[in-house]
Image (tube, rainbow, N blue to C red; front, side, top):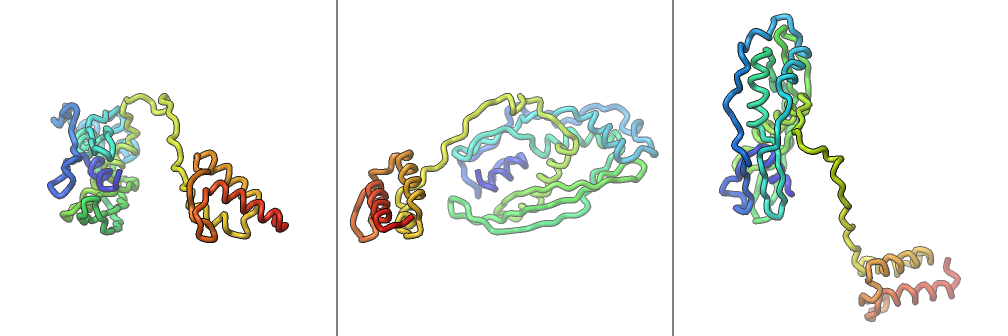
Length: 258
């Protein structure tokens, strides 16, 4: 999956008309964006409460955020995620209740132009954002989060900052998804890409290649069933690469090569 798709999915948005029509975003269940009733939004915000204590109380309010948004990128893949609006809807009321301010303090950005698979051009922004989290007593602590986003219409910077804010809230709030633990799922690694037979030619023809390495190359070609692959040998003739390795190995052994 490309950076553009990842950034868009993390921001919880739909792609505009400049992006491939095959990629769509949907919400499996429409999130409740109505602010929950947390009661008196000032009673728990005592003027003497520090930033650390106030933030711990916010964490007590936000116990979980499910991954209800769905990214469907066709060949790019499908996955569920938690968007910025969902995170704000959970943390906003809790922060207001406990007198917590999450302020963007400093932004460091890097940009580059990228090409899309359809030939378009996009601007990619990587933002490292420093936030200050204030408590009712005026104390604060700082925390950093990074965001990355791409856009063709000059919006990559605010998108990257939104992703950084969502990351900050969820990570600093230690917010679980209540999904099944990833360690409970077993999987097997995919096979490594097969190295093509022709890519061995330079090493086979190199006089410095040892007999031991030639035997190893022959074994690798046999494992990938490429011993019969036809290649152009060192004198320009067509030869099966397995036979070529054996021939060169014997020639070097006869000549006293190691």
